[in-house]
Image 1: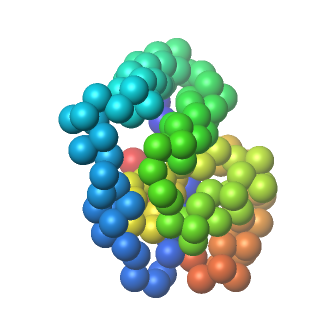
Image 2: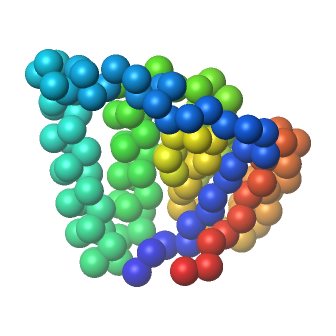
Length: 134
């Protein structure tokens, strides 16, 4: 049911996610309204993503991936090198979100020509891009 995904990752050593999420749990436990509302939104994104997958809505799924990253960027400090990967991918008109926190992104790229152009651009930035086999 998944649309055609790509994964890009930095070849250099990445940061441990705790470096960038260090106070998120504390903010949650303190009831920070921004964090609480964001977690509700993440849950809604997850449900909507499931609906998109079940109905075959690849575009909707892709848009939710972007929404997920945009929400994350509002919550925590992000590694600028990882954000640069997001911006590079999006410059090709594809979706992009963190695959975790350690230097990898994932998104939807339906067009093989666009994928090859992205792969070349990411290579120049010291990153690898591939299509996972699922």
